[in-house]
Image 1 (tube, one colour):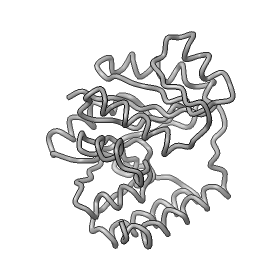
Image 2 (cartoon, helix red, strand yellow):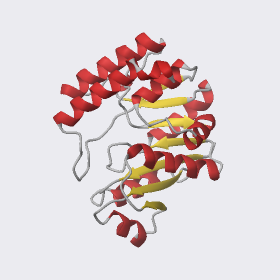
Image 3 (cartoon, rainbow, N blue to C red):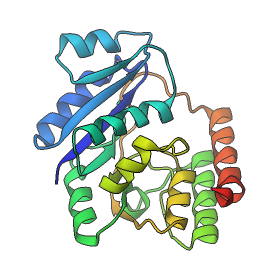
Length: 226
């Protein structure tokens, strides 16, 4: 199975080189593409200097648009699966082969690298929000997802096509919920995640609260009309 790691990056000059180097060293059979989403720092220069395979977006368009660009790349190059992989060093590449094997053996559409399956869970506001999202997904779809806010997700070929050609899909928990409601098989594999290895996350407390509320509202309301 040909797997592509899509790595959205915005102002990740502190992390991008080590993230890509670790991925290549650990998973030499996994291809990758960095989607530089209009970074204002040296992310683009580093990609050019280090020969990192990347696509440059001229302005910052956001995670959804950047990830869709990666899915279009995967579609055009005939990949069987895409794994969403953070540029900041939180995601560990050794789980990619595990996810690919689980996808094949269980005929899954989405495989999530799950902290809860590993005996871990987000804490604080993130933890509360994650548990609420899990409950809402279970209530609205019948699917149990222990770690819905994990950003390390693998999608199969059918969903590559849907993301590449559709206009209303995002790499977020509400989309996973919608796909599950429409029959997609979602499974989880145990995984550990590191803290951000450099740079600044936009997810401070106010943004975490807004993100969780928006996601919950989307699962409850808008998903039913899609």
